[in-house]
Image 1 (cartoon, helix red, strand yellow):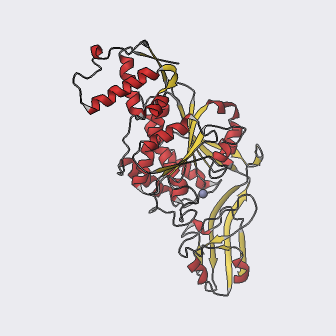
Image 2 (image 1 turned 180 degrees about the horizontal axis):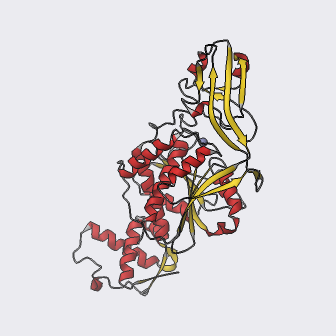
Length: 437
Ligand code: ZN
């Protein structure tokens, strides 16, 4: 037994509060798919867990993609006739379309309007827009702010740079007893957005912290990389070792108050898919499991047919399914300490299943072994709890024929994995089972 069994409860404890605190620190940083915002974010993650930072030069070919130029931004604004900043990057980094090319120009409202983006259906919110792979520029603003713009000339400035530089990502590798790997991946390319981006980072950081303190059968790799180009680059650089990846989770949109949603790997029946389904089924909470689709987060890369890795996506409310998605309303109030705590607990329960899911061989397969003489069977009838643990033992003994793992047994018996694992542990101590390699 290695990873601690954690209770799935709804209260925010220390993990939830501290994870929310990290989100609060990372929130103001202007991240994009490259540049100093990603570096600063990784630096702060590196204060919590050991992180190796990788820099890949612009122009590097990674499969069908090319690592783009590095984007950095210092300031941006739209000033009115009086010199007042009517749109100000210093107030929110969402005001500038990510990867905007530099601009310094005076223009009429009519010309400026082509570069303005709003959300008329949510007139107080600033939308989030990007233009990574085609040169463009733009400002995002609330619809109310937009309606207040008068028909006059505006001074437009985006003090950004797009230059040859690097793509940056971070890896935290925790070696285990075997080189079989669990990959946990979060994207780090969104600016001031909390659920889409920062929640996944925070839960991954706390999972890594927790795993560092335990002995591990698997090795764990936590990848913090900009969406799409990050995993594409990582897969191109690590193609030779992807066969070590036995299980994986993408963590995204995992801090909102909604129910947990799991999107299965492309394989659909991978061990991680079954482990997540088991944990959610026994969570006592509402949840949803959806089939794989080549849309969403970095499952698009990990589950491309050339890799087809057993990696699913753990979320609460999925991308695009909450109105706050990709807007300024995805803020520090939208992500909740108790949701972060609950997501962390579920993650650790899933990892607990993966760590302990092994197959055993019954050493006394001809009729039941006599449990009573070993002190494993109740002395009195009618004790419900004792019956449960005995039932778990009987299931483990019966199905431990070498072919069936503890998760198989948990699924077939309808009992919790933790009860099955405990029973196996006890039987192992009494030499009634032997672990299979
Ligand atoms: Zn997003």
